[in-house]
Length: 346
Image 1 (cartoon, rainbow, N blue to C red):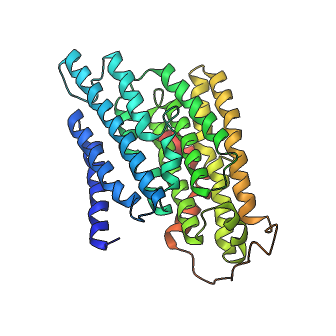
Image 2: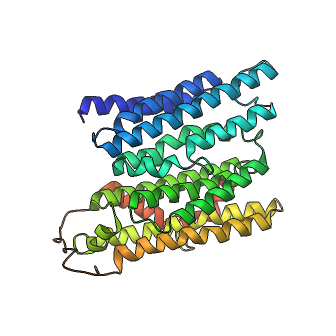
Image 3: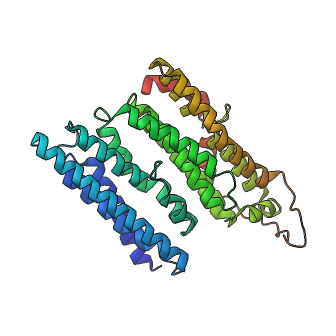
């Protein structure tokens, strides 16, 4: 892609996100979301491969439907209350329509079907943008309207997301699809807590962005798109394979690592809200995701390729590790010791 064009699209992404995050009026928030959608479409379809064009078309149709629903819900609320302020979402019908629209924007179950297909059709860097930057404005809208959201509806959608994100990722062999289902599962953890503790949901989102960025950038450095390639990558970049394993275990939420922190705090908060049964269900469902994270980690570091004739070992490269990858991986592994400070921040 032309560097000038890429600069325009990245600037538009930042502009759209900033407009949505800083706006109080529904029309301005909608405008920012539209700028984001139009900026990411050329980045998805830049390879001119039929799969990329298909992914861009699916993304456009889903986002257009979600934007129409956001406009409809805000107009319905303005009709009932006479104001366009985002925080004054008091009409129950508007709340339900808005929740469905933002779930479509984010890829929350049961509106998640487009997300793995779109992620599979684009490059790893575009996939990283879709999994992190693009999700920030809709999450912000959910945070701003968290007092008006229906807790039962959010809990059902969250449990569905964690269940389907784990279940559908079990038999995948493409790393981008596995990360898409991982994203759906993590969004479920954010959705379940957003009505009770919005700051905790935001903390979860920040840590998710950090760990997902580390995984995507590591896979991009290793040029790994499927598990069979990942199984031979240890001969080429052993240090990257080790970092990938630790980051994946952190993303899975295993206790000594950073990823355990949001799950621990969310389960604690749900127990305080007398939702111990819901906390138990969502914790047990996250074991499904743990299986495919362990599978990825196993493929990255432990296995030898089953057939050396089909899987040629790659040459070892003494290339230095990217600084951003090293910083993100370090934070993804070592942030848990500062967790006693989190309650004072949150």
